[in-house]
Image (tube, rainbow over all chains, first blue to last red; front, side, top):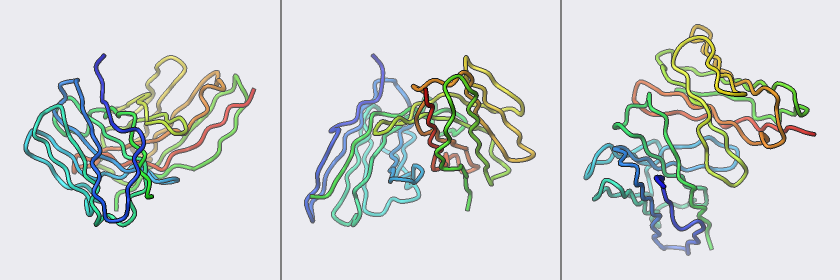
Length: 115
Length: 110
């Protein structure tokens, strides 16, 4: 089945540690996105990528990094510089570039907590 | 700052009733409007999208858009307990990003 796979489902981070969240899609979609969701808040855009080897900062990129070496993969690293990483992280994709007239489809999410 | 506003709820309706969920947005240039359903602990799932003024129906769901009033709504007819979830409104901007509202929690009681 085509879709977006995020792993792991739950992740725990120790103080000073970097952790990487995986996002893989087999939809052949061009664009991929990372959002963060905190309780009672809307989704906030961290990074997005329209094509391989290109990505742009979203509204809350500080403390995060991404790469887009393959079309189907867009991993997110939460660095030790992100002082409040506890949140629900969502990966999304759109078929044709980052034209926001298209609906975005989401993976199942990764819940990150601090140990 | 571009914003999307939703009443956080909860909106409580009896089974079989019509649930009406509302969303206002600040960017007059917005052209695309999306409704997502999010069950507790799960990721958002696309329900409807609408681009033109007026109504768009899909099964029990109707999206209504009024660009002059900067208002988009979602009606759920014959509400079921399984419709109980948080409904997120998302609106595009001229920078090609989506802005999400904080969501309205809907509770449908038997």
